[in-house]
Image 1 (cartoon, one colour):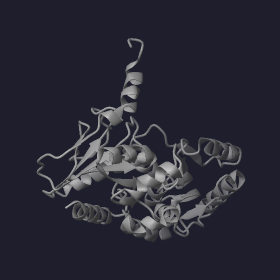
Image 2 (cartoon, helix red, strand yellow; image 1 turned 180 degrees about the vertical axis):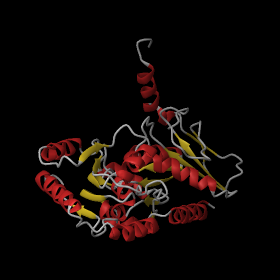
Image 3 (spheres, helix red, strand yellow; image 1 turned 90 degrees about the horizontal axis):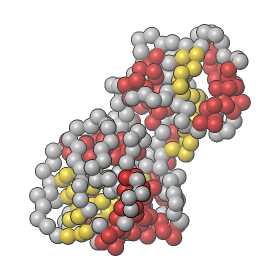
Length: 349
């Protein structure tokens, strides 16, 4: 046993978690407790950020009868370094059978829902990517998870369409949630630069190829800036001063970087990731079919030329930005979360 590293030991303990879960009936001051199952992520992904943000937002509603909390089953004391207030964390595997609801994300739905059903724990499934539903799972294991879920939530029109395609019989319990984007953080700088930003970790091979295809033909007055190893403030600053953003989204639930880039006044070129079609507005967004590297490079060079000749209607971006601010507003996200907790409360009473 002494040869096991802490990481290996932690993984073994996690594998045996089914024996740690308990469901009981105990006095509780809250009518509803929402416990969000969350992966451990030193560099939090968009999905983890959504989990933390939703817990923060529900608790900030200050509803006496509801509490939201984050549950890191791999390591109960783990905390992601994210700038959200009013967070709460679950530090045991004991669940209140009557009024606690486990929120399981789609990538773990098959295995975690099976444990919840065995233990008599209520749960819902939060789907943040319709193309990750079958990660390490088959329909045989996924179907019962969705069949027995109290509700199924989704965060984009594309995810909703995926769920209805896969599970039309569960359509009535699918709840659409809208995400918000910090439009006060992602906004254009007063003076733009001839700068092209992109995220190399998104489809790394594709981004590397596009950059190489551009290398010899990129005008000396333009430069490329990879957005990596940056915090949110640094990303916002980079997008604020750039003119063009290259999107390498791949089958996203709702890829936020292209949206954030558009809010920061960028012309967006590249892949929609499917869900991006929800915000792919005319003039400011230009789609490239996934894998068409030559077209990606050609279109980018064309738009650079248009910028240099003053042929880009940047004033039309202002109208798009106003539409996107309204579509992805905090008010809409909060209204959806309030509706969710009310629907769940009605189901468990």
